[in-house]
Length: 293
Image (cartoon, rainbow, N blue to C red; front, side, top):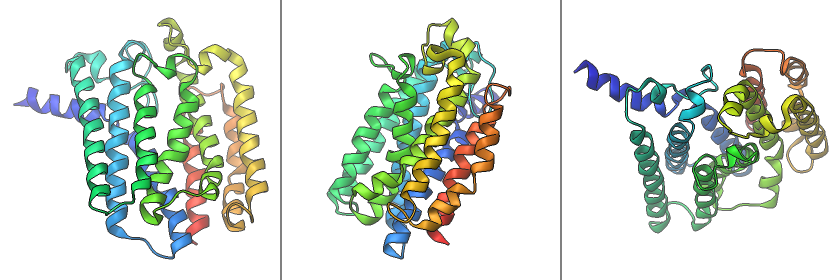
């Protein structure tokens, strides 16, 4: 019995529940945008959209576990990086991760199509969910394996910055607008920054197995990209406030500048990706507060 319980726990652990929180926060950004526009939230649509987000994200997590077992076997794990450690431990077969990824891929598709078919969600949400599932799959899975070609960071920034938030927004509003997309550029940039921090921590293990993340390709020059992206994020916020999104949203994001500066200063000087992950989280929370207060 204890062995079965351990395997069940291992299966859950491979889903990376802690990392899933970042997707939840991104979803809340989209929800807050919809609330600002509509003045209300449809709880039923919010729940269904949330299920799509969670199941789709779990697909990506299990796919990553399956694809990254080589580098995860070598790196030091943290709550933010290095995988769950389940597969390197040998507690469950490698196939469990792959089968779980496929299961959640089909579960997400089935739920989304059912919701659209019965008119609970608008057809347009498929224009987000389908590309998001494709992008989440090719991030780590062959033959594309974007994370091993220096393209994973961009792919992840699109998924976390745009797709996850737009699922919530579109589920509520039934539309995608140019303004809603532009509003999420600061979020996508800080997601990119976060992934640079995560991959910086894993760079030695990644390099040793030939996993050519953008960090591995840039080496020490990664810090300059980190600085540039942080600066661009705040500059775009200044440009967008009062136009693309409300002034109060821009002000809320700009209050995070001190932490943005500190995170940039400590990048490559710390032994954990925690600061870049926290920067992403507080920028998202700032945007949420700007919309709902």
